[in-house]
Image 1 (cartoon, helix red, strand yellow):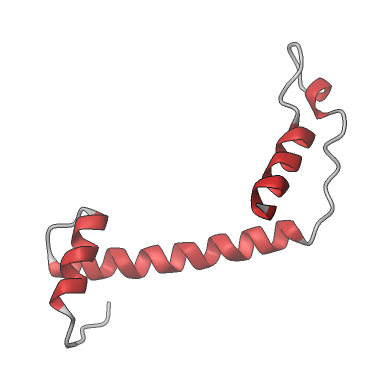
Image 2 (cartoon, helix red, strand yellow; image 1 turned 30 degrees about the vertical axis):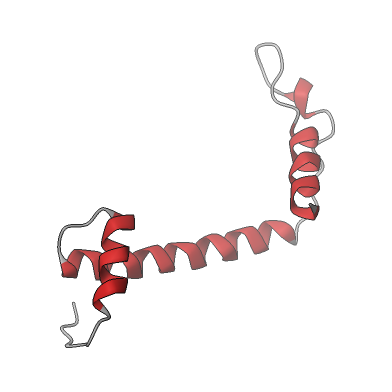
Length: 84
């Protein structure tokens, strides 16, 4: 771990503490940094999936035990939501 001394805006720190549910300054700063790192990873994963053409046709019948979810419809609804 790296030990640093920084000046932090108290209002922003309190706001972050409320959102993150942390109880110390150190925990709040670490949780905020972790949150940003996870968001970046999530964006990279979504970007990778966006580059791959996926065929969900027939997905409702593809699962065992009486079928599954219609992923084609879910993908279409997600695209419609993004467009709105």
